[in-house]
Every structure is written in C-alpha cells, then in structure tokens.
Length: 424
Image (cartoon, rainbow, N blue to C red; front, top):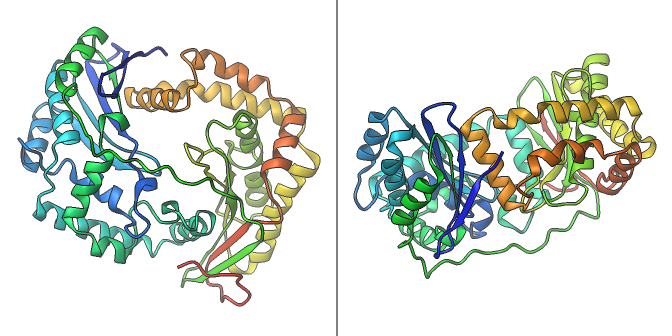
C-alpha cells in the first residue's frame, strides 16, 4: 500500500493513494484538534466545533453544502475523537475539484451560524442524556475520569451536560481559529485519481490557507495510578457492568506488537481463541459479553488497559475474581506456543481487511504518517508479529498489566459501600 506524500509550503501534509477499483474518491481531512485540545473548563467544544464546520461557510449555507454533495451521489461526514477531528467526503472521481473546493471551505471558512449552533447543541445534549442510561457507556466514562483525571481526556468526547449547555458560538469560533490550521491538518485522498493531478489541485485550493493564530496544546505526560480505586454507581438494570483498567500505552511504544498479540490471547480474539471470553463466558456462563485490550485505544497519548464483563448481580464477585485471575495468570505463567501461533495467524491473516475500502486505506495511511511506520509497513507487519515469542508475551504482561493498582468501576444494581472514590 503506497502513498505519494507532498507537503505544502504552509505545512499541510497531503497523502495520495491511487486505487482504481471503483470510480470513487475518498477525501479526508484529519485535524489534530480532538478531545485533547479542549480547555479543562469546556469539555465538548472540539466535538461541537467539528459538527458545525459543515453547517455553513463563507460561500455556502448548510443546505447548499449537503445539496451539492447529494447531487454528486456522495457522502459527507465529520467526527471528533481523542486526538483528532476530521471531515470525510466520498464522491465520484470526476468531482475531485468540487470536493476539494468544499473541503477547503469547510476547513478554512466555517461561519458557525447561530441557528445551526443551537440546533446541534440540542442534539448533543439529547445524546448525552441518552448515554446516561447506558451502563457500559457510563462505566467507560467513569473509568476514563480516574485514568485521565486533571486533563481534558477525563471527559467524554461530547462533553458533559453543563459544559455543553454553557458553550457560546463565539467560543467555537475561537477554538476553530486556534486549532484548525494547515500545520495541524493531514489531507488523505484515496481512490480513482492521478496523484499529480491531486497535488496540483490541492496546491491551488490550500496553498493560500494561513493561520497565524494556531496554538496546539501538548498535554503533560500521564502517570499510572499508584493505588487501587473502586467506583460503584447504582443503576436500575438487570445486568451489572464491570470494568477493570488503568493507563495504557502510546501507539509508538516499542512493545506495541507484543501487546497486540497478548490482547488476542487474553481478551479480544475471535471465537474461542481468547482466555477471558472462553473461560468466563463460554465455559462458566458468567457473561453475555466480555473482553480486554490494551492496544485498541493507543494513540498519540496513552490509551487504557480495560477488561470488561457484563453479568448478573449474583455473579458479581465470581466475575470480578475471574477477570483478575486471568490477568494474573497471564503475567505469572505466560502463554503456550499454540496460543501464540493462533494469535499470530489471526493478526497476520486479518491484516488485509485494513484495506477493504478507500476509507480503511485512508485511516491506515493516517496512522502510518502519525506514527512514522514507514512506507514498507504493510510488508513488514507480518514479520513484526511473527517475531514475537512466548517470553515476550510474559514480559509485557508483567510490565504493562498492573494487578494491584487498577481502577474497578461497577455500574448496575449495586449499592456503593466501600468505594475509594466516586467519579462525577
């Protein structure tokens, strides 16, 4: 999977990958303006900003933007995550110029109309209210609070009710001015295009984009907790949701591939390949769903190690003990050669699915750029996984899985009694 890399004079990075399977193109702008850039007192501002950039620009109203996209048979979406916000446009290949025009308008010239702002704010508040009734979501938010406390990452991407209610449109304009910049943007274009043409047209549209107000904040290093925490939250539900977790690793951690193999063996492999699902769900019948992972959330900042189980209230202690037992057993005794081979086969065999669609390819190229994985990463990946040995798994399990100082979050028909702390 090769991409042509071109950097504009203003700092914008352009990645182009030609794929002529279908007469379509996927145009993606990834901006380093995610949850991590929220001021501590304004959770949700990055997410709301990302929703508003397509709701009106200097030359197009919201309805015009979506009408243009609809008339081409295309699709326009935005998103906000922990470290990135972005815009994705899928359109027929003959509409490359139109697509680049629209994306330039959306990135550099959103106007944040007050009526659209109020509408989107109401939608977010409704979503937050609905999320408050989902035990797994509530548990995940509370775990995040403890792992990342004191930083913007402690809050949900969408924010919290009070902060979103208090947001004003001028604050979004200021956030956009400080965070959306060519220096913080990676433009990834995949599909039936000619790379020379894409570079030429992108230069025409984006070379004049300047932002002297750009001010990306780098968060302080995170520290893993030094004491255990228990956080219980009562909800009138039939099931009880349990999360165990602590601070994880960044994507560029040198042990990432050993940890990825460990994840498959411990808790997130398919079928009967993972210990936690096989033993707690299939053999003991303790859970409708269960998993664990430390690499899935890794990124520019450390993700989290999370082990999850949803079970009946009467099985609470057995489920908790079962999760911890599997983690401790892996760290103490390692894995078998058969488990290692099965996990390696799965990871190398499923790697091809990362290139199923142009959108998948765009995400892959973004990761390659952000984490300096190298042009030959697709060819190197299978060997990186095959180079992992049983002793590597045991070593990383002992180094990165803490079976003493971790946070336990329990949500459901439980009555808090001995909680170390309560997340807000």
